[in-house]
Length: 169
Image (cartoon, rainbow, N blue to C red):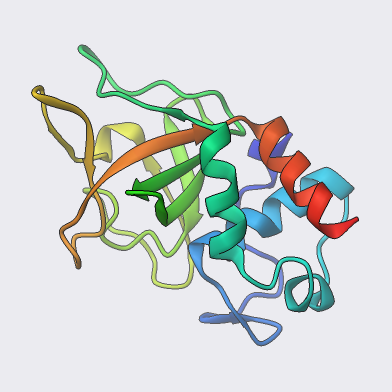
């Protein structure tokens, strides 16, 4: 299960893994590939079919569903789903649900109320999402560095893996 893969990327030395920047989308695709093929991706995979991680994550957006602020309690997710901070069709950040109430990812500085790690791994409870308010139940604050409002889109694990598989085979 993808949720079990989400952690520090082996061999990554911030801000790189084998010369490739350890961006949030890179990490999401790294874990999806590893779980789908039961082996870590090679440098060639990220210099070939997964060369543009932003475009790959963007291609997942139409297959996801928009999340809303819960009326009570914290947002509950399905472990393994990919969660994308979508800014009008542009994936600004991606991470993965480790548990029903925890998101893990790379470069999560400013995306949650708690501190993240620049080019490193961090996990955050869904209570650290910064929702806009009751009148805009889909809006969550994006990176505090850019102050944009995003919508959260949840992509099922199987769909995300199928997209990665289709690109590398």
